[in-house]
Amino acid sequence: MSLKLKKKPLNSKTGPYSFTGFLKRKINKAPAIGPEASVTALLLGTVNTLSTKRYSDLRVEEIVKASGVSRATFYNHFDSKLAICHEVFTEYSKFSNEMTPPSNPNLHPFDEIFQISLNFTKLICANAALHRRFVELSAEIPIISALWDEHNAQNIESIPRRLYREDRGGTEQDRIADTFLIGSVLHENIYGLYVTGRTPAARMSIKSPEHLAYRASLMMYRAEYLAEPPSRCEAHQYA
Image (tube, rainbow, N blue to C red; front, side, top):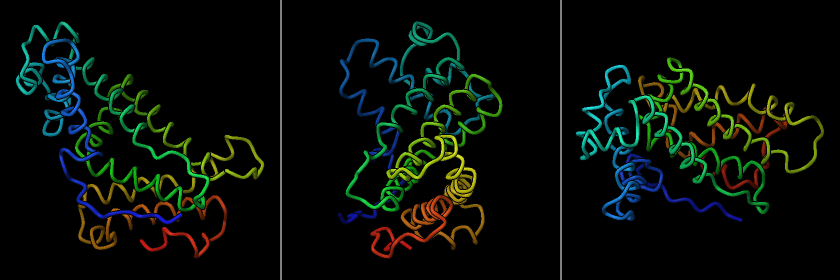
């Protein structure tokens, strides 16, 4: 089965990978009056505010203003800025999991890992500011750190399940360690370079989101199989 992918800009605020776009669509579908619309508006306002402010500088008044709801409405649903930030991260984790492509037995494992990596790349690129806040808050607040670790664990576990479509022996812990202790650190570091683009060298070394996903997939495949993926794999077109 061929991988047919169209190259599109990843910074769209309303694209399928944008969490703010998802929240806006959810508001439009919700009843005009009711808790669902209010809570979603508060989540959207929090995400928009966090895109320009660190958590330590965030104030409930700013969230309320960005959300277009009253202060009383905020406290009807949340008791603090920490509570609503926790809800933002919970909803984002659900959104991220729903965007993960389903397993496809017709694809070679390398092509399947490429699809997962590209999906992850698009999510990070479309929600770069929010990801930066996740990283900051996970280092500062234990309850957010636990949520962030759980979110990452769900992503981590999906990769060895795809790579180990055939029984290669070893425990599940071995499979996760084989794939990620070697591959995932590099995988995430490259994404970090792509998102921040802090150096000309980083921008020059990564040609496109597809190229980034290809490089990450190649690292993980090599780490697991100690071999090169077959030339017939469709993902090679993005090398």
